[in-house]
Image (cartoon, rainbow, N blue to C red; front, side):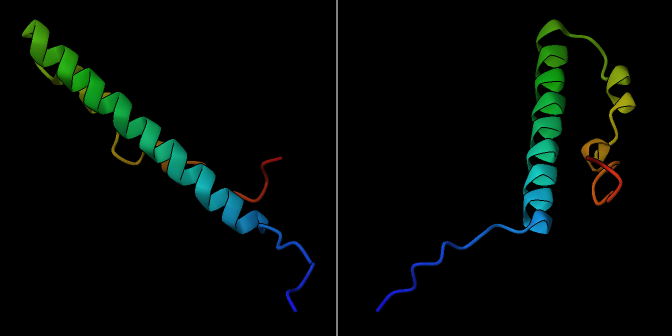
Length: 65
């Protein structure tokens, strides 16, 4: 007999998944910026403003609502 209780996703897992999605979006933005720069022949100087862990700055904060 299977359990009828529905499993619930914990807040920790939701936060991990949100952080992962944010990191993926930041990575896509950096990739698109590099592609645009390469197509237009611009130097890649402006991309240093986006650190590789830009999406991780708020990751793990428990103060967020």
